[in-house]
Amino acid sequence: MKKAESRQGRRNLRLFGLFHIFTHYSDNMDVKTGISGLLAACLLLILPMGAAAQDDPRQGIPADVYYLLPSFSQGMVYLAGQGPAQGQLNICAEDQTLRFMDNGVELSSNADNIVKVQVDTAVFVRSDGFFYRIYQVPGDTWIAYLRKVEILRDVKKGAYGMESRISSIRTAGSFSSDGVMYTLEQAANYPYNVTETCFLYRDGQVIPFNKRNLRKCYPDRKDDMEAYFKSGHSLPESLEDTRNFLIRLSSGADL
Image (cartoon, rainbow, N blue to C red; front, side):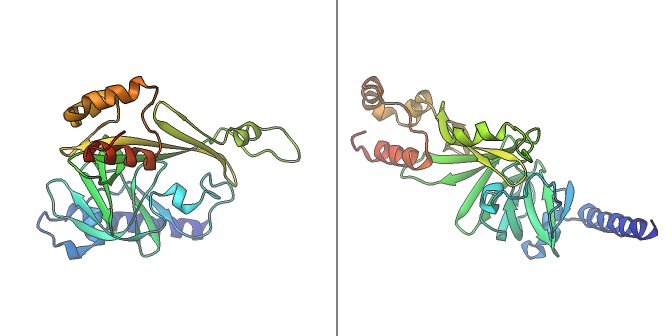
């Protein structure tokens, strides 16, 4: 009991220290302060790294699925009204929080003042609590790509031949509906659902990818798009198809 209390005490001291740094953050802090700058994004939880708990819902989900990047990498966080900060970054696809590493501890933040994250050439903008990866195409209208993971915590893996809903999820595979790509997978502990949706990014705003907005973004291609859709074509749904479609629109090529 005393050992447990001691560990909890050290954890509380660590939390106090982190938030102490946060309360003393200055708008003029240089970007090289790195992790201290990230702490200004308002830490909400601490996730110790190491062996995952046996019943950890995310155990068994590939890292490049659970996170929006394959691994934690050095990157920049841009904060509204403050200077940028840097650190070892990633973004969680499940709860759409910024994640970063501090001495082997995974920290999480969903502060409202995070506006953009950049890791190497990957750029994410934050809008309405979600992180959208930006893919540039020719012209003023780009792609804002949203990927989310939902762990089906109420569906537990069957044991000793007992029935579970997982078997039906396995057979669903991938499908699309209303511009959203769905993939249902089996994790080690729980099944999970991956959704991928393409939006448009124009004038610093994320807007729905639909025919109405396409006509606004490409007014000189209205007639071409009307003929294209009247001939039985629908909006592309995958990232690659959306990219190719916008490239043809912006270049004046046949749809």
